[in-house]
Image (cartoon, rainbow, N blue to C red; front, side):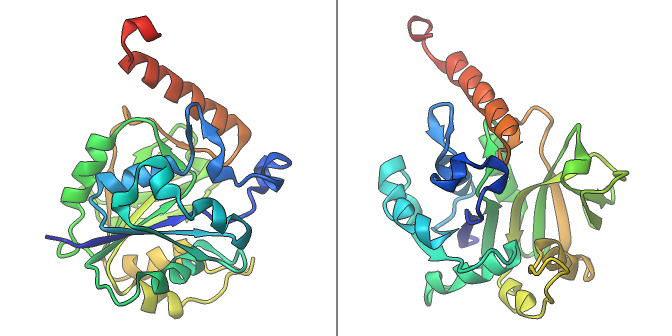
Length: 258
């Protein structure tokens, strides 16, 4: 059985949502009836993660200290790690690693903290069954999107082997976008240590993915178009996700409570 650790990337300043996020971390904003951070935690549970580290800013660390008990995810054994400066997602992943201590894991599930799955937990559980480290060292969860130019876009073979990753292309080669959910083997830390900072002063996750792609060790798992996934990094997308969550809750509620 694959032993998995989880890393939720919940740092950053949320500048696209200022002034609200000048005082409140965007991952604590509500998606209808639940805070954003509860959704990536739900993903970790669906993928059978044994321990989870939330990477956050120093000012927000206290907010996540009891998030497991607060939101009902104590089984994920949540710890926090502070990213001192916003120098990239790959850097944030490296920041999380010491929090796992001496525990060994076969695979690390990494997700952005503002990726919200309103539906599709059954498909995510299937991702956990398919994304085996003995099949490929790294996996990216992708989905067709009507606006691929706003995301990282992937090209693949018919068998799911990733042949290219392009960040926010003007002319997208496909409609398949990275949802911000990945699985990596334990070599990810040594790979990050060999990355160079980009022109914007960050260790980019796209460059980490490239190290696996160069070895034909990056595979994609596509979610169905029926899965409602949102990147809630802007006010409009947060509002869209809230509306979708409200509809999903009402559909599942007894008629007397609608």
